[in-house]
Length: 508
Ligand SMILES: [Zn+2]
Image 1 (cartoon, rainbow, N blue to C red):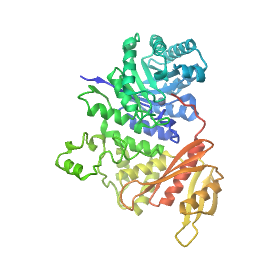
Image 2: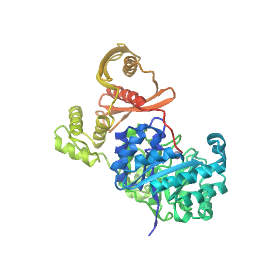
Image 3: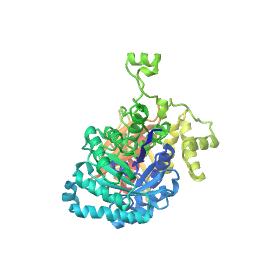
Image 4: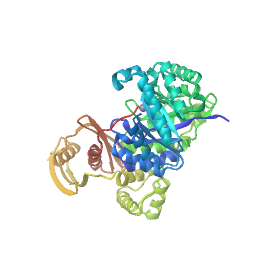
């Protein structure tokens, strides 16, 4: 039997710290359900003290998830730990994850604490967490830039205080694989009591080495990997879950380990996280990118046709990528729609189902073939997104090469109707300027991109916009067969996210 490597997913905590990737409670619960289907061992659901929204999300996820463990993050303060426990205690298998930095750089400039004070804080926090929850993880933030002897002292003390998992984060993404591997080996060999707990790692991708560092750590004794879907996270992101899982699986000849993850759910999970966060996956992304299994050169195509093994080390089917097939059309009824929504993993109330079905009917009038991607887009937009302040009611745009582009927009703002018209350089510009004017918002448009959800000219256009206001960045998305309508929806979704996003604390 090969050894188990536990997969600790932090898409909902570290992943959400990606600039713009804010998710609301309903969206987070949906991602958590999908992560459970993917069969990750631990879901880090959030950092409860950081905001009211995070607290609610962790609580809801804890109540819903039954198979995976649910973890909540806390600094070493008593209040943080209490708040984390208040949210996560509803879980069938809860975990408190507490952290403090151990590097001199962080001690001196950020914490303004001595090594002795940090050691005491760590011990006190783990002891206190242990009185609430059997399952306690301790992380030494910025471990890779810490003095290794001091780090080992803190680890040993945390283990004695009752920690069941010890996590070594490369918080700033500074490590090199061979160096990180021997660092983990040193801890594994020298820290007393470490054999009684799970040794974990948490890598960042600033040098593009997060997955490589994680694999090196596994080869040297780590048995838990912290990672995120699509590798999203602070700055350049975290270890990508799909990459580390498929590396272990594909190179099992060298990496004699296994995970509990069910790979055929990887692609759907990647697509869902991208759709909800608005963080588009780059085409050349390993495992889940649009080009990951596309063979361009004639020689490669010829080889693949003769024998897949020539250029394919794993199959697209193994990670859940299938050729898109038509699932529903204009004549599909409520029953077929309900079944398909359920198969995609959504559990909707009758009321929500009716709402989604109506939108599906409208789409089917314009578009003959409806794919899974279209259905998912409808559910995410109509049900999960829940526009709060701003809602689009009516949009009319006049454009072309002989007229000044003009947009007339009617919106619902805080329940009241407002309307206005304006000009622009093009139809999208006129629409955005008018929305900005009538909502009296001050956001700056940083980026605008259109993608087709599926192939074909009648496909829905999916627009992604990135807005900035006083240093806060949000990403909005909208889909429609009309790209101007999709653009308006994306812009309004971003405005709603800006409202939702409060100044939040961040973790390691
Ligand atoms: Zn991190």
